[in-house]
Length: 74
Image (cartoon, rainbow, N blue to C red; front, side, top):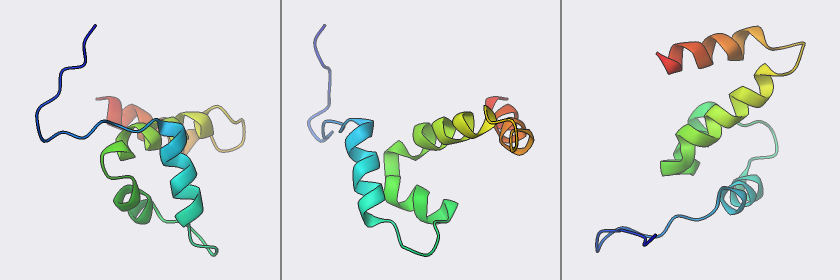
């Protein structure tokens, strides 16, 4: 299957490379959701959904991420 792109669209980088770059740029003190979404640009929705999904699988803090995922799914 051929890749169909417009003339002005750049090829997307793999999520693993994007995450490596985010980790490299992350401030040492703490990371906010606002900083994360501004750094990720187009990748922000998928990676935040992945992070919330992984957090929702933990037994301790699963209620809040599960509710956020449910709201975003609707």
